Image 1 (spheres, rainbow, N blue to C red):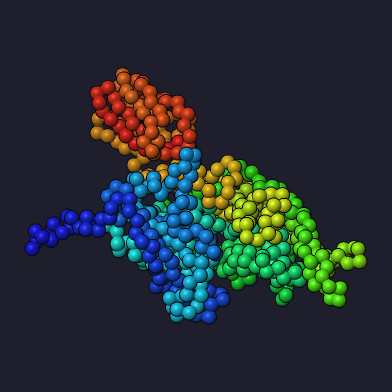
Image 2 (cartoon, rainbow, N blue to C red):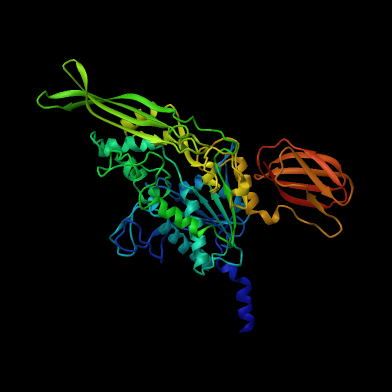
Length: 552
């Protein structure tokens, strides 16, 4: 009996093995911790869907990497689409494929657009735009589920892009505070709004007025209800129109024009997040898509749009139908301490040979004394062309007449959780960031864009233990630094007259080779694209040294 038990322990991993490179079905997952949001009448359980992409080595679920969905009110990113978001580079490579080739299993968590809470089966929840806390409780359920399924003792890696970075931060810290073992060694925050996110307040005022004000343009309603009035957006936006309007929900109350979050949402959430802090028993690292050297997106006060829209004939009793038009202008928020008009809307009708104003709307915004307006600050950029899916001519015309494709969505300082700097345009001091390591590009990039550089950073963190190795006790090779840029410096305690140094990319293609003598310090010039490579050193006596190499 004892012999049989030992055999079972020895071979049990293979009982749970899948075909290498295989995928599980999409599996529904219900949280077991309820959350009561500001607008909920009772605590409600959340839900999600997940899929396991097994590694390409042995098919055993033993090295999980979690990939957590962010803000997605319409579930435009289903699980296969999320996997495709891991594509990068030219020729195209995929981060998911790379980590699976190294024996890691990718677990993708998605939140549906709308579902009925498991609590009562009747209350609808907007999953991809729901309260961050409730989505975090769903992630906790997934972490516990995978920990119970996985083989061995390998600790997890959790990757949280955008709002997923807040969800995963909250979940891991909540587990620590409530004596739940998350078995996680590394948390990668990817352009997440740790100090909040930004959507130009001028755009917010405009679309809210178009839907809820005099024009009543229902075609723009999804932008208001989904993009602006969801629980998650009200928790994250630093400046929200609801912080500035009167009881009509449309007209400014003039209490303040400086940035103010949605009442009962923004400050409460940020205070809770700050009080919790970051996970303590993991290595926290951050990638931002925002510039680290002060590059702006446009300029403060930039005229984003000034366009006249033909809104067609409308009934105008007793004169029958008359032609109408809408004149819209929007500006970015201004320079520090300035107050300017950021939204102007004039609805006009044509009668008796002239245009007359049927209704008008305008709104102002003021920047603080410590910083120019958020809209043009360094940060991960929102692509406004994405508003246009081709289904709405009005939105298409709006997008076609924009003077800037992008606005600052996730300020660089927010992505790095730097909280002691009130000027959003300041170059980040990473000593002020709580993260153990950070990746900051020189230029602003579209939000959650994968690049050769940030992928190399992520892989270096995931594969950290194997970036350099010691071989034997009498012969040691070591890289002076890793990552490298234009030069590799190889350290050795032995001299070798003839050695072959080869470098391969992650597809196995040899991209560099040279024959050289190796001494105590050998300088090797490089001209390689940013990315992860495999370094192979073979000496004349057939000693071989291999390690992963990161090129910035």
